[in-house]
Length: 196
Image 1 (tube, one colour):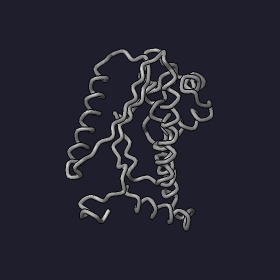
Image 2: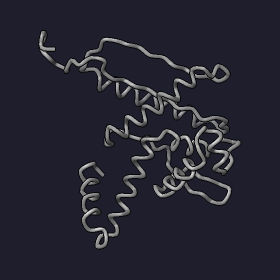
Image 3: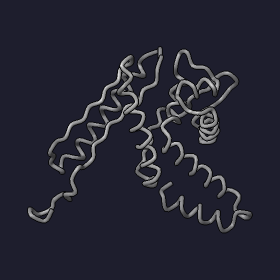
């Protein structure tokens, strides 16, 4: 749903909760999706289920991800509610089918929370010399007209990396791939010289 539709359902739910029980469900789904986008560990839990040494145990997941058992349990409920995780006894099955989250339709607060947490994780990984991690950054001048082409190349690269890693039958760790392209200036595209 687009943000206007979501807001419409939320507004209706506030006004007529007793006469529109389905709206409460829509509100909960929206909150679950927003929370999943805002917290890095939701996708990490899904990816953990693919590990050869995975244990379907909240305490194990919490220890491996460095988060609380409560955070894991809340995430599990939300993932199941969204239909992205199926829990069958001692088997947890990722049913997201390679879902890639898009943050464009969520609030600035949600996006800020995600990026703050991911930045913290990246900074802490810099000091972990026992494991492979790659951090690089480049600042460059661009022709704004080429940005759609660059975005397509980034999406293609991300897809190629995912495809390469999905060819493996064995998995022993979970990593996060971050690729960002964002402006450092306040120059608007196609501004006339001297206006910016």
